[in-house]
Image (cartoon, rainbow, N blue to C red; front, top):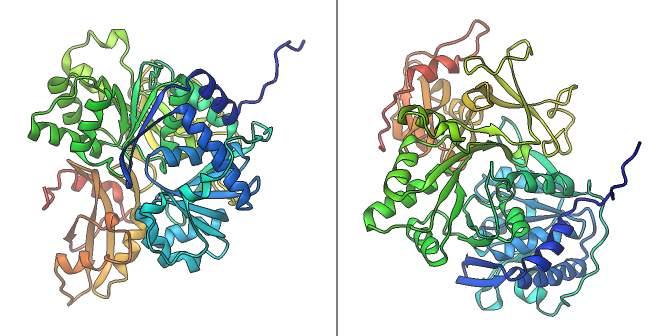
Amino acid sequence: MLSTMMNTPLTITSLMHFAEKVHGASEIVSVTADNPNHSYTYRDAFARVRKLANALKALGAEQGDRIATLAWNDYRHLELYYAISCSGMVCHTINPRLFPEQLEFIVNHADDRWIFLDVAFVPILEKMQELMPKVKGFVILTDEAHMPETGLRNVHCYETLIADKPDTFDWPQLDENTASAMCYTSGTTGNPKGVVYNHRSTILHVYASSLPEAFNLSSRTVVMPIVPMFHVNGWGLVYSAPMVGAKLVMPGPKMGDGEILCNLINEHKVSASAGVPTVWLALLQYLDSSGQRVPSLERLTVGGAACPQMIIEEFAQKHNVEVQQAWGMTEMSPLGTYNQPRPNELDLPADEFMKNRLKQGRPIFGVDMRIEDEDGNELPWDGKSSGAVKVRGPWITESYYGLDNGGADEDGWFETGDVACMTSDGLMQITDRTKDVIKSGGEWISSIDLENCAVNHPAVAEAAVIGAPHPKWTERPLLLAVLKEGESITQEEMLGWFDGKVAKWWIPADCVFVESLPHTATGKISKKDLREDYQDFKWSDV
């Protein structure tokens, strides 16, 4: 027997239409390089989205084209999200912090046709544009008054490009499985891997992530997404906020400035925000030094890296702000678990309650999760057994773009690379990683790439890089190097070797010269032993 229900496609276009009709008066506030206090409504935004869609058409962009963005969190980037995807194109958000070789690979592998970029990133692409032959042109996200002199080919000013375009557009009827966005992850060794989202996966993720057991969004929420929009769709907040009519406050390039974040929170009565731990450290430091308070702020979501206990305690004790952890990854759109306290947890002794707060949370509906031992056997959720985390669900990738390897196994399970244990009621705690990547300030760093760079130094015989605990960045790369017999170099010389060869924020924060490195029975360097040996490492910069 079949149902009598309509088979209406789940599309970002339908979300846009709904937000404009029902929540059109809700506000979007932005900090941009050319305007520190831009404000308009969802109704204004989606009128400009239609102008942008006409501009894309005039540029010759077609359905299926990948349109790249290198931009901060602001209203123009939001307009790109909707105009590109709802036109049947693919919004390809790129992390501008990546090393130029990675940017080059990503743009060419994705076959990007146009790149929209903030003024700050013009010098980067000026040096690289000849390495991106398939890119037809560039659009700088500013107005004529702030348009820079540039050597970019076929370059346009964003505001001029859309100024004379009509604010009506005949949106295509899209299949819900049409690709809507893509993001590359450099969380493994080798070249970055592309994840392609579709309209259906995005809308389902929006529904789930907005629930009270997750971000808990409504029209009464004033949300400030600090997690970058180039980082896995800004955790979906630029979709979920319009769906419920929440006011959006977008800090643009000032997302790491504690004073400006404080001012935005107080001026616009921000009640919820989301970002990596380093952002909240910056805000806490400013609040402590200035004596300022943030009375409207109710909760902060921390993801991208484990949250230090100090952040949770200080926000709770000094500012009455609840810090909640979440876990996910680019391949999961990204949300997998969220740590909303349950009623029975509120009565726990303080130390037990804090132990729960430091865990990564429970799966949200739509994410099927299991942990496995080394032989692939499923382990129990008993709070003790620890195994590799595998997931599956409607907003989790099945494969990587343009690659035959990687992705889900034959049973549909995707291995996350994390090792965790689960309590009987589904509370997950990450205990280790199956891959030797380092997560610093919410961003992945490849230990293998750093090791390869280190051993290219003529004085180095062998090298290992591990992620050692760091009070500010959660982890930082620590280089352990064995010098060739008769060779002698300083720490400064060794660390200086990386300059210009990897992204600056990848460069190891310290170096230790050792006589030998531990090895496994198969001859591989034992990272497990090294992490244990240096778990209490004292950083010279702390």
